[in-house]
Length: 178
Ligand SMILES: [Zn+2]
Image 1 (cartoon, rainbow, N blue to C red):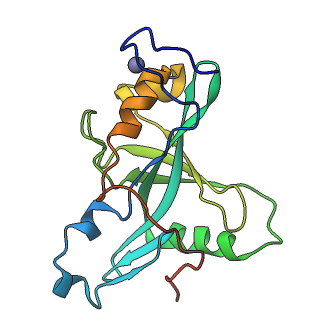
Image 2: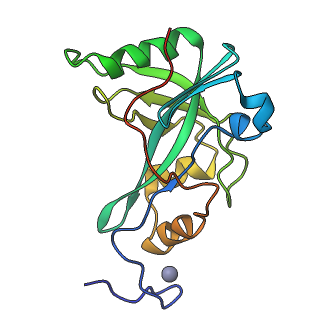
């Protein structure tokens, strides 16, 4: 049973919706006519003009006494690593779990700037979102990922969801190809 929050008095349900970014900010910023032909995109992979490469990933924040709260955000990788991640996505025989250097590609509201924040992206299995670990120990998000957050804070993230941020209908087929 969910108890009243000691901070705000409301009940924060255990199963809160993920704050999920539909696309990298650099892609969302394009006008529709610019976007046409410039972006190969799905809800899992994006390539922008064959110059910038993004992977959708899960950023888990431990919550005291509960399951982790997951932010779904985009990480930007260099081209070689992008295609390595894509190869893992498609190869059910792979069992190793490599980690790649990347940077966050979304500005998460309510935090110091998160675009460009150094992250480690770890492949966790075929057709599964990789996971992210924040590498900048001075950033608030690193502290939240390391020390965990309260159910109240998880409720604040869930409350940031609006039509622009939330993924409505995840696709299952990556569109990026080579
Ligand atoms: Zn609260």
